[in-house]
Image 1 (cartoon, rainbow, N blue to C red):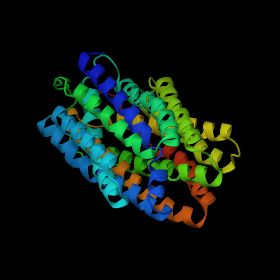
Image 2: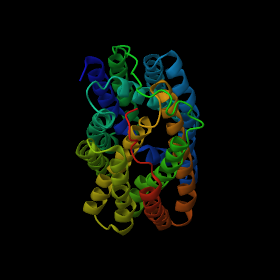
Image 3: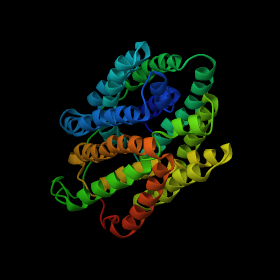
Image 4: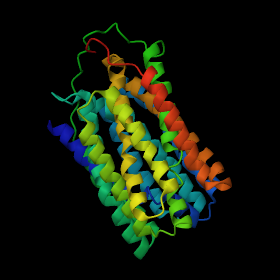
Amino acid sequence: MNRSLKLVTISIFAWGVGEGMFLLFQPIYLLKLGADPIWIGAVLGGMGFMTTIAQIPSGYLSDRFGMRPIMWISWIWGTLAAWFMALSNSLPLFVVGLLLYGLTGSVMAPMNAYITAMRGKWSAERALTFTSAAYHLGTVIGPTLGGFLGQKYDLKLLYLIAAILFIISTALILGIKKPSIEIHHDPGSSSEIIHNRIFLRLVTLGFITIFFMLFAQSLTPIYLETTHQLNLQEIGLLGTIGSFGNVALALAAGSLPARIGFLIGIPATLLFPLLLWQGKNFSMFGAAYFFFGGYRLSRSMLLALTRKFVASKNLGFAYGVMETANGLALILAPALSGLVYNQNQNAMFIISIVGLFIIFIVNLFVLPSNPGRSV
């Protein structure tokens, strides 16, 4: 692992600690600020919208001007948005800060392209899952620390501490070097993204899969607090268990072929809504959060699989398109689950279970296999 990839890994670990402190408690904090479940779903969907609209431009700009400058801008923007949230004292101002923070999701396309380009002798699967594991190792610490501080003091404090950690993360990312251009061994195979049918199939399957993976996730903290009377420390511990699941599944399956890793993540994630729906105790809730690590595994593997069908010169744009599709799922899932949750809490879990089961069967037969030659 070269110095720049080490800096990226440490930086996103620090970001994971900070983001992990507040992200899990975001629905609860919005509830305390006066929002109802429908509005919470809409706000979280709005955050997903902000992430989505930035993905393709970010990917395109990273192909044109380089991945590193876009990463720098995203890190600085995210830090400023975190300070805006931390200093906000009302629901409207906090929502503005949250929406601005959503734009930091634009870093995914250039960051993943950068990691792929700087991977050295590692496979794309290994590099992407390793750095993803570093982020989630950070979120192992964040939720437990956030739950403790939120329970003892106030949830607002979590945003202040996170904003400080983001400054450290940004300082690290500013030290990365410009990557050399990766050589593409077959430049004519899939250079036109829009006309690449295999890539478009991946985008469609990825969107549907991610949608059902996220459907029950957004409002689960509220469900656990209001229905099962879990306190903030207990919910924070669940977040830590979930982060352990992210790390464990990413490291265990990181060396597998991308297609297999993506498929494995679906039934693992299906256990999340199933165990929450049927669960009656903390152990079952903990198991649910652990297996939600399948979502992150599938998302990383989807990007690694994308690379096999896209030319290197178009990789940033392709990742941008893929993350835009994932962002659309992030918009629709919480917004629609908020409507469902307001009518019937259990229906939120049932829809996720049925949807994941069906899309798993579809993916088994339709998801593209690895190409016969290296790209």
